[in-house]
Amino acid sequence: MKNKVTVISHPLIQHKLTLMRKAETSTAKFRTLLKEISLLLAYEVTRDLPLKTETIKTPLATMEAPVLAPDKKLVIVSILRAGQGILDGMLELMPSARVGHIGLYRDPKTLIAIEYYFKVPHDVDKRDMLVVDPMLATGNSAAAAVTRLKLTNPVSLKFVCLLAAPEGIEHFHEQHPDVPIYTAAIDQQLDEHGYIVPGLGDAGDRLFGTR
Ligand SMILES: O=P(O)(O)OC[C@H]1O[C@H](OP(=O)(O)OP(=O)(O)O)[C@H](O)[C@@H]1O
Ligand SMILES: O=c1cc[nH]c(=O)[nH]1
Ligand SMILES: [Mg+2]
View 1 (cartoon, rainbow, N blue to C red):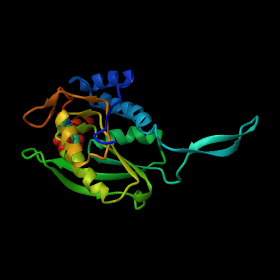
View 2: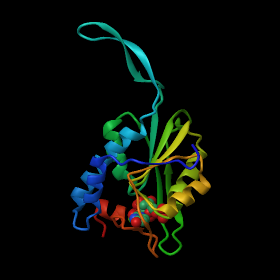
View 3: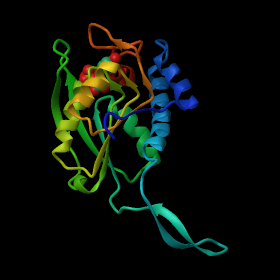
View 4: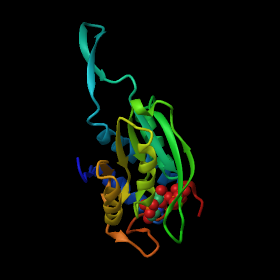
């Protein structure tokens, strides 16, 4: 499991990601695309969820049918703000998942992540945790979020994003070699302001139309 990065390179994801990257893509379209991609990411990220069987009756017969095994299943933690875009899509696929929020913003000068909000369900220690944020740039935000969330003792932890920079992957795995990263793409590098290049710009601003 050490230093594991999975690039989810499904053609539908790659096509939609290209549309998201385009500077002319509207806020409404950007939001819809992120939601659609998140459904596809969720499908891949939950591939190893354990199953058990239960006896059910179809209109024709009784059968042993697969259902998700644990009573307490997933908790999805959104890193505010932009994590909300992935959360929306994932909740459509997994409407019973519990949800946590961690509010972080990057100080524009130091690029250090500053926490301003934290709330997770009381029973996260019985749940598998997906931490979601579209962007892994320096990795400061994701690493700080996971450091904080590890204190809540989730059963397991995965980090899910849309775009990752090589620098961010390295920094994140220096601090959390045990936490796998799932991403739709790994871009070239960071620019001097800590933005992913070629990237898609500021995910939060594009999602909420704040710029
Ligand atoms: O890997 P890092 O260098 O930490 O950068 C990534 C972070 O930057 C963005 O959030 P931002 O700070 O812009 O906050 P916002 O979501 O409220 O816009 C993004 O959503 C990540 O949380
Ligand atoms: O490229 C980047 C880097 C950090 N945060 C973003 O939203 N985009
Ligand atoms: Mg932002």
